[in-house]
Length: 405
Image (tube, rainbow, N blue to C red; front, top):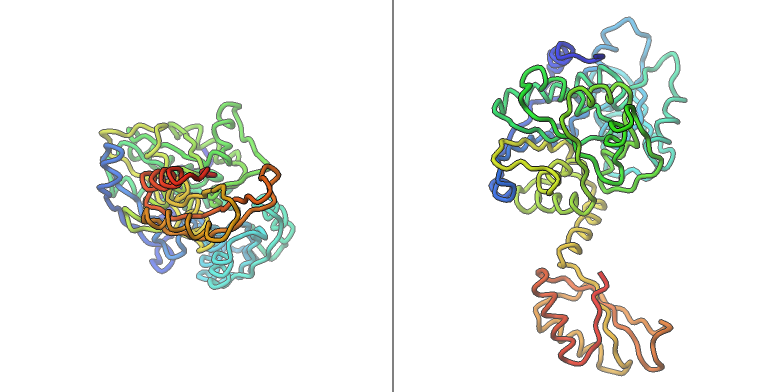
């Protein structure tokens, strides 16, 4: 293996600056425990200074570069956001400049944070793979490329999380780890296999960005070109030979979760744990809440690997999650287009205790008769029960109403 537990122990010795990397806490959660019938210990890695685990690998890599005879004065990396911040902070701490290439659609909050840690940000391409290709063209004799996961030093740094987990939860039956490029789970699985071989390691990927299940089936890394997921932190499009080797050797199981399940778990963490985690960080919670992973009667540790959720992304997640819960509904009401009809329909909705977010007229649909119209309401409700009462009230009043979502 290119990464061993000895490499991870050496990396831990290098992570000696708590202003860069600290040991993150373990928290219990009664609501999640009741839902899963398990003893749940949340690993709060999203509370790192940069909001994710990525600084561990970056700092392990760059401390060695700075201490070596290398002529490198600059670190170059590509990232959708979290690796960017880790490399920027680590480079600043060891006295290197940093240039980070991020996709053009990267959240502004992650761009601002990366620049705030001292890096120059270059926006290029539509996704992580395009940003990666461009970043490699910027590497010269005075710089070192810091890969997000295809680097033994990066993987060893991420593996220090595995050593922490074993020490903090020595009786863990299952550890659940989100997978993007595989550096995090590769490092953790290597450490846990050496220190607690009876502990099960489960990886989780977003369904629309899942490459590991097929990679394991085919015996080598498989890549995909198109991904669309709210868990942008694990949307790498593939793993490397290095991380494939570690996953194949040490990971017991890999499951996938949908964006709806991830969004629901982001909301769950906000409401029940009072913690804001990004989509990638909530993927582990989504896995233990799903029917694809049985953790009943176990001590299970879902890893909250990132908390860098921009307000735009939070709005997207909230909208998706509330829609799924029938707390944000889109109603289409067929009316005779005459004065007072919108007021009458609005009053019926209000009498059910719901709040109208917005409303618009639609008069141009081909199926409408002359003089008819649709009123389309976005309504905030308390859930399915109140939504059903609204539909019943409108139908009892003689309106043809359709729930569009």
